[in-house]
Each structure stands twice: as structure tokens, then as C-alpha cells.
Length: 77
Image 1 (tube, rainbow, N blue to C red):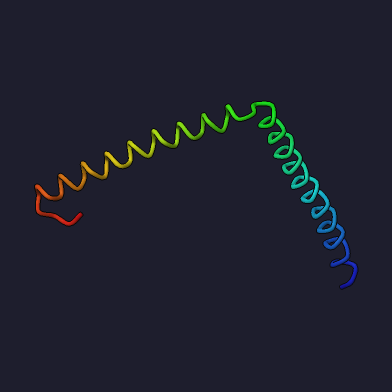
Image 2 (image 1 turned 45 degrees about the vertical axis):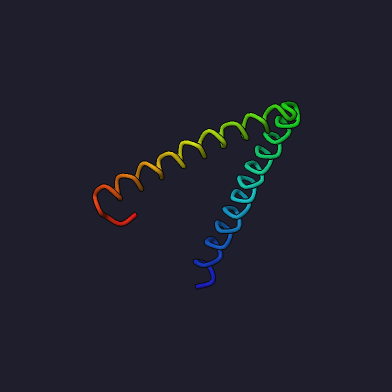
């Protein structure tokens, strides 16, 4: 029985090494992508702040529209 199980463990060990290499490659990709942000400086931060502010205003307007409609229909908010 030991003969049958031993190849499985060798395969599992090889798979673990491939899996670790794949995860490390993803980690390296993220590390390199964050280095790009340092090149962009604060401009990228301000871009994100403006986008989030615009989306926040749209969201608040939508909530107001839904509340107005619920008040007209007599339904729950």
C-alpha cells in the first residue's frame, strides 16, 4: 500500500511548489504595480478623491429621489 500512496505525496509536494510559485508571482505583480503609484504622485490621489466625491453626490441624489417617490406612493423608505 505504501507504493501507491508515495507517488501521490510526491505529486502533492510538486503541486504545492507550483502553487507557492504562482502566489509569489501574483505578489510580485502587485508589488510592481504599487511602484507605479509613486510615479504618479498626489495627482492620482486627487483623481480618486474627485471620482469618489462625484459618486457620493450621485448616490445622495438617488437616495433623495427614492425617498420622494416612496413618500408619494406611501411606501416604506
